[in-house]
Amino acid sequence: MAGSPALVLAVPAVAGPETRPAVEELLSIVRGDQPGIEVTAAYLGGEGAPTVADLLSAAAEAGLAAPVVVPLVPGPHEFLPELHKAAAETGAQVLDPLGPHPLLAEAVHVRLSEADLARADRARLFAIATAADGVVLTTTGGEEAAAAAGITGVLLAARLAVPVVPAALDVPGSVAAAVAHLKSTGCARPALAPLVIGPEADPELLATAAEETGCPSAAPIGAYPTVAQLIASSYLAALPEPSQEQLEAAEAAAADKRTTSGAHAAR
Image (cartoon, rainbow, N blue to C red; front, side, top):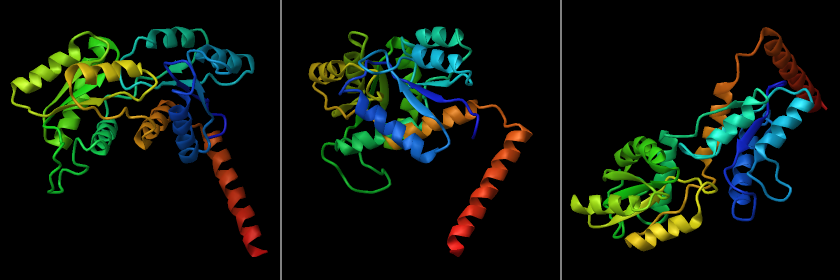
């Protein structure tokens, strides 16, 4: 809607060839689904990449509405306090992380099925020899993030019909302990499922966890469409109710568009 604040997607990573592709794809999906929203990504640094502070300052200097900042993380993360600090100086709003949420459980399920570690649809009665009989839901952000991931883990367990245990990739021994717990309860084929969008986690952490536990791992969530859906819905829910003037302006614009389309069709 005209006059709405911009959406700033805060990426907890330096811009580069490893982080930009997924972020740009998510931005493209959001823009396609919500063409009236101005969407920009902010990074921790990188050549030609604005930071959140840069974008908030630019909006303030231009006299624009303070942007709404959406952190690109599925749960608690160490960079959130810095986001809130930068926003407090300009009056911008920083939203909560994207999870826990059923749509993230869906995305993780899909990544597991793509790696042949789970059935794509548990209602389909066919076997996958490599399917996991237990899952460790790995995330970053320490024990707090692992605890929050437990909620998404419950949702994932309901989808997979196997036990799911959360663990923190950045806490030594956390993933190994989760795997050991699953094995102690009778799981013979545990697998790792990253509750990680991508940029917020060091790829070496994911690789090391798989290597040290000997468990296969699904890929990070990446630019799965439900992540873009969560980004847009979080932003839209944070907007104030439109004024009567804004509603009338939107209605007038829609009427003008219909009139113009009708005139073109008549030619």
